[in-house]
Image (cartoon, rainbow, N blue to C red; front, side):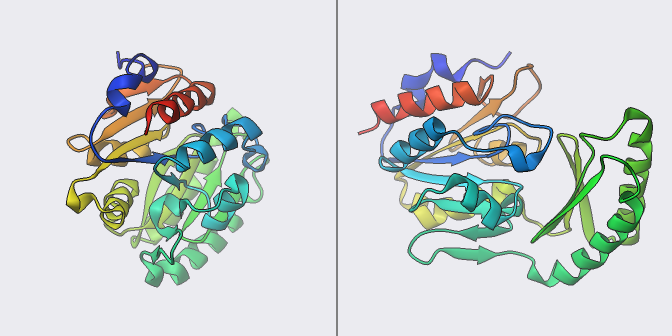
Length: 256
């Protein structure tokens, strides 16, 4: 059983140097909803993130497209990383895009996925800049094998792409040595971690966030957001976005 982060706020907040907080979006800052376009950030959560950003570095790392997550969060002066960290933008001209040479391959795979899945009720293909998501949250159980088989077939034809499985979604990304963990490490270097004055905290709920938890096992703190206990590289846990907001507020109150 992973201990609750709310019971260890003082330990999480205490230490030398500045804090860098990395946050997933869906399932972390907002609840998981049936239709992803309805995952809207509450005013109170936005204010909690804004207040924290006034005390330290804040970055949002999402599987969503960069422009989508930036438009939903609407906070200036923080870092945004879309497409699981493949597309990064921040203040003072911070910008990085990884694996741009794979974009034409993604476009071909996107067309094939539409051809295979558009006829399945409830299935939805979503193109992000550096990935393609095949959502099946609203697909009848009897049709789920058709979705999985279609995605598997497209992935098999495009070995330059890799498949990751998220919450009710299959996603194809470039087969490139990059993930949320590597994006966090790169951002920490940009924030000045080589000088030893940055304490990273990563909060996320999905399987893709485990890459970041593992990257920070020795140098930072990972916090899993999940109603159910499950194996994780995270040190602490929170149950839902409401507890995330409470933690962010408590952290802000303890940071100088």
